[in-house]
Figure 1 (cartoon, helix red, strand yellow):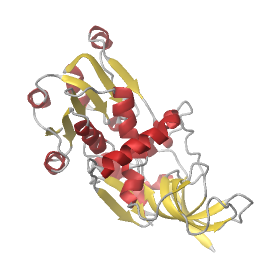
Figure 2 (tube, helix red, strand yellow; figure 1 turned 45 degrees about the vertical axis):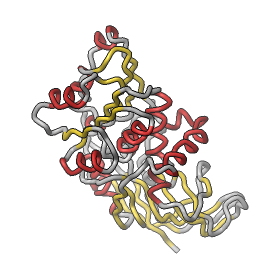
Figure 3 (cartoon, one colour; figure 1 turned 60 degrees about the vertical axis):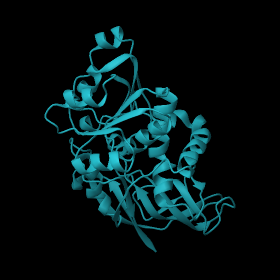
Length: 329
């Protein structure tokens, strides 16, 4: 029996185009002692994937090598096993790849059959862990402060804003359409959402955050970054989760003025979840608590078929996705 997988065959230059991937058919592997085989049912598409495509060896994960199956996180069912901890029929979550079948990875864990896919790949996995880690562990918010989130309608940004509201913050989000802004305000409870295509972003932000900005959760980079930076309060914290506007550029945009960082005593910190695995259990428990109290909502954007990932990954960068982007296999 064979299965389909998608391999990386070229580096992006700088855009992700269909020709950098190739669909191949591979034989199912024979299992060694301790291994198990997973039929993937749902696969997550995440902005971090863009950084895995570049030949950049000084990052938190090695790049995907040419000829390798593209890396992903996913949910699946164990269909064959030589590992008693992962019996046939178990549902698992962890690192997979762009493939219909994968060998079980070291980070996989058995998860309840009844949990929705959106909970597993969104609120309780990478997006939720990223949101909680950035805001709560790195930002260290205090009730009454003002939080600004860019990419606020995305899988991470939307959770950041909701956690902020649960923790007593004033929350302002930037998103790319009036529809997304309405969703943030009316369904997720953001105090204000601003379409980043507005004519006068500085005036919009000043009206939405009359007491200035204490916490800036940065997901996008681009022109909004400078607008928010200029309205930071002294002792503010800038949490750099991503700069999606720069991922497809040969030359990144210039960064903030270090004089302002100095005089306002700002703290600017980037982060990635793999550097904080020691906090996973505690963060997962906190996220589950928010979910159980009805404080976290999300939208799941599902596309179907393994090969839909080839075009689907670009939905993360052009704004076509409406919430957490998942491939249903």
